[in-house]
Image (cartoon, rainbow over all chains, first blue to last red; front, side, top):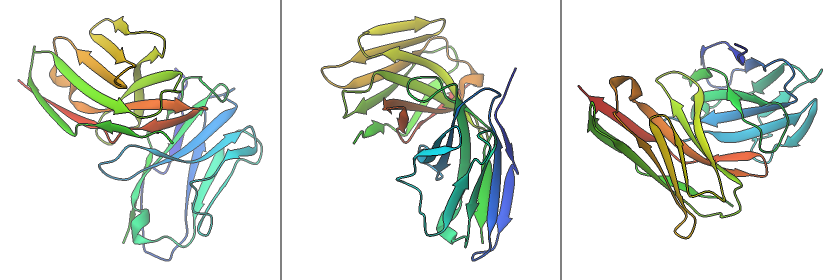
Length: 114
Length: 109
C-alpha cells in the first residue's frame, strides 16, 4: 500500500541551528501539506502545495521557516534558526487533488530543540 | 474561521461503548472527519460524514451529526485495548483541515 514517507523520524538540534525535514508524498498526489503538531494539540497547517506552487502559507512563520517542492513531487521544510518553541511533531500529508479529497498522513518528524 | 473543540480525556472498560464528542463553529464545512493517532505515529482517517447527513455507520463506528447544535460525535462499539489512541475531529474549510485538540481514549482491560 502506498504511503507518505518522511525523514528523519526524530531530530534533536540546538537552538539557532538550521534543520530540514523531507517528505515524499504518495505517487500521483498533486497536493502536499505540512502540518505542525505541538504536544497536546491538533495539527495546524503550515503550508499547502498544489504541484510545485504554494496555495496557502498564511500560517508559516516566514522569517524562519521555508518550504519548497521544486519538481512538484517531494518537499523540504526548513527552519533557520530553530527556536525552543519549534519543538513539535511535523507532519506531511498528501492528497490526490486539493479540496475534499482524503489526506494521507506520514509518520511525522519529532523535532526537539535544546 | 473554524474553531473545533473536544474534551481531552475519556476512559472506558474493554467491551464498553466509547463516545467522543466534538463541537465546531463553522457550519460551512462540507465534510467532517474523525482521525486516529497512535503514539508516535501520524494520523489515520477513520471515517467522515457529509454535512447533509445525520448519521453514518461503519462497522464498530457510528458518527452522529447535529447541525443545529454544531455537534459531532464518534461512537465506538465494543471498545478494545487496541482502540487506545488520540482521536481528532476535523472540519474542512476549502480543503484545509481544521483539527480539534484531540481526545485521548484510554481502554482498561
